Amino acid sequence: MAEESEDVQVESGQYSSKHHAIKSADSAAASENSRLGAELAESSALAHKNASQSSAEASEASRVASNLSESKSKTSENNAKASEIASAPVKVLPLLVRSPLKIG
Image (cartoon, rainbow, N blue to C red; front, side, top):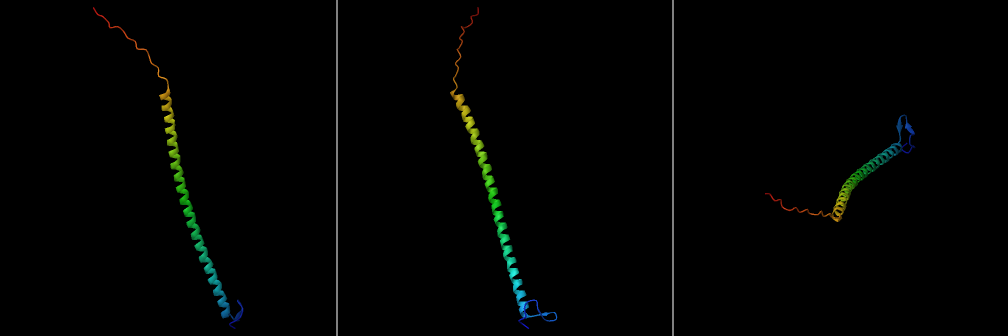
């Protein structure tokens, strides 16, 4: 009676020890699969969290680089204007000299 196949009653409403051993092993395997699935989900969540953090850091680095580039562009523009002004010909206006006014 102890060796009856799974799901075969040995007496009315009673199953063999082999039946219960098989059911117990199935339950243990399902429990282990569940545990492994939970570990995998936890690892996946951590990987996504880390990827999100990396993306946020890369975005911030890009923003800083963009601001620096804009600042350097304005500096170049200002330097070009200063160079243009410095190289412009200077007009010298003639100095008008008047003779002193005599009274009297």
